[in-house]
Image (cartoon, rainbow, N blue to C red; front, top):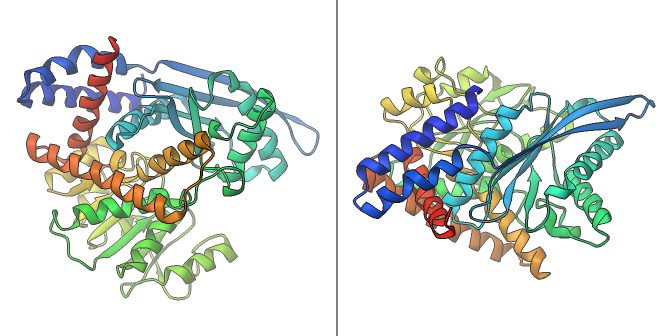
Length: 420
C-alpha cells in the first residue's frame, strides 16, 4: 500500500481511538469502531484505457481512474483531474478526503475522485475534447446524478465538464445536466461556483479569525495562483487585507506593502505567469512559505509543506485551500509549534457545497441568483466551522482531528442506521 492512502488510514485510526477514549457518550464510543471498518477501503476502483486519436493522426493510449470511496451518505462526489502524476494511491486518498469533507460540510454526498495520467499542456483543445469524451464514455455506466457526480479539479475546468455532460447526455439520449457540476452557467452551471472554494475558505477564515487571536487586517501569503488561490487573494484584498506574496508554477513574487491583485491577475492573463510583475520582487517559493505573515494559504498541490520546510514557517495561521498541502510529518512539527491549521476538509469545502447547490438546481430546473448562492454557502460553511470548533473544545484536539471527529460521528451514525 502506498504512502498517501496509508496516511489517510493513520488519521482514520487515530480519530477512532480518540473518539473511543474521550467520548462522553457510550453510544458514540460503541458506534465508531464496528461500522467505521467499512470505510477503510474504497467501495470500487474503476480503471480504464483511453485510446485517443491525436491531431497528427497518431494514436495515444492514456490511463484513467475513478475511485468510489463511499456512498453511505449519498452519491459519490469528487473532481476529475488531468495531470501527469495521477496514480491510484493519489486518487484513493483524494476520494477518502472527499468522503470526510462531505460529512464535515453535512451535505448528502459520499466521496469519489478521478483522473487521467496526462500532461494537458501538451494537448490541443481538440485533443483535450476527444480525451474528455473518451473518458466519460468509458465510465458512463458508473456515474450519474443519483450515482456518482464528477466535477472539475486540477487542469480540468467548466469546458471539460461541458464535454462530459454533453457526451453522457448523448449516451443516455436526453439532456442530463446533473451528471456533473462545475459546468458553464449557460448549460446548467451555478452562479458563484467558479469562486466557491475561495469564498468558502474566506468565510471559514473569518469564522476562526477572532477565536484564534488573529488581528482584523492581516498580512497574507498565497502559494498557488490558479482558480482557488487567485480568487482567495482577490476576495481577501477586497476586504482590506494585505496580500504580500504570491506563487504560481513559474515564479514567486513579494511586496511587503501589498500586491495589487487585480493588476496581477491581468498580468498573468496576458503573460501566462506572474513572473516579471513590475510592482514586486522575485523570491523563492520556500521563502514565501517562511514569511512572517498572519495567514499562509497553500493553494497548489499536495505535499507542498514538508518536514524540511515546516520548522521555517512563521505564519500565525494556515488555511489549507489545496487538498493535503501539508505532509503528516510537517503537520506534527507545526502542531507542536502551536500553529493554527484550518484543515482542507473544512477550508476548501466551499467548492463541494456550491457543487451540491448546482446539483439541486439541476434536479429542480430552478436556478438561484448569486446573492442566494453566497448566502447559503456562508450559512452552511459557518455551521460546519462552528461544529468543528466545538469538537476541538470538547475533545481538546487540534482543528484537523476535530474535523475528522465531526465527520466520523456523522458517518458512523449513517452506517448504523443503514444496518451496515
